[in-house]
Image 1 (cartoon, rainbow, N blue to C red):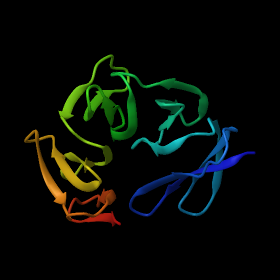
Image 2 (cartoon, one colour):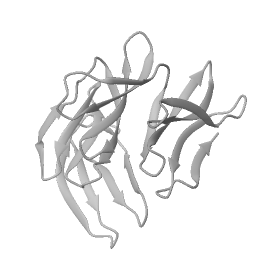
Image 3 (cartoon, one colour):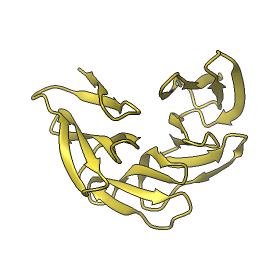
Image 4 (cartoon, rainbow, N blue to C red):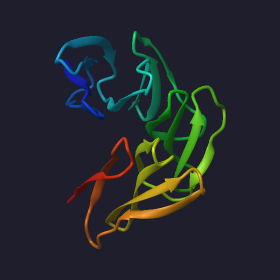
Length: 189
């Protein structure tokens, strides 16, 4: 059974989701602001979190326990993104680099160029990156302590982390910083 994966280009930000129940190939569809749909091709049925690159030329996604990158005009060009072991949750930093989680001894936040064979450690303990903020030159990411999730921010300029949303005994599972860097949207559960 084929399921749909959608990349939605909104007026300000980019959103992506995948609804998959089976391991059958999934259609990846680009949706324009005017509602025009363009089928890009097929990705594995367990694809999770497709993300369009800032230049609109590539897509990153997680599938089959690995991170993948493909040209949006030729999804069969996909190749595994593996500058470190156990790469998950790839998120675009710019058109040539991704931030992601790598499971060395524990989940940590890294950054690497698309063609890199090694990664730079950004944050020693992190759960998943939410997105890169050009305006703030850094990434928001999820942390997990027991069953308490919080949102933190890594600054590339200072090489430091700081809390963004910390609410005791709650689950902040996703965040997005506005393009101007002045506000954020957070899912709190």
